[in-house]
Length: 124
Image 1: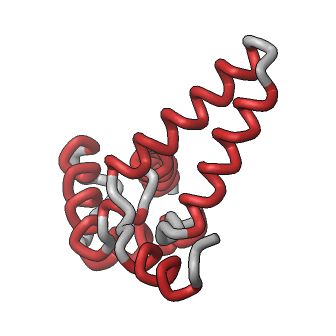
Image 2: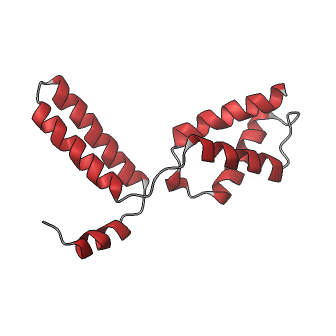
């Protein structure tokens, strides 16, 4: 059994990174493959490890937090519906990542939300 002090040292030593996220995704993928191969015991082991590791990583931003930050960035970067969509998207990503650490946001979620918010802005 690990002592509380050791666990605390480990938890402060694991910043969220794309490497960590890729490792977690690989373990989840392994669990899916084990389940498909009727190896529930191994799938359960992989998923328990993922749950344990996730407790040591900082949480990703929620969709609501991403939306709020994007709306702030639109205002601050003076992005208007009449702007070139490609340039608007680039300016918005830059403004967002100037405010938020890349490791704290799911890139796929951010892309979806940028597209949704820019399309809302264009139709408003």
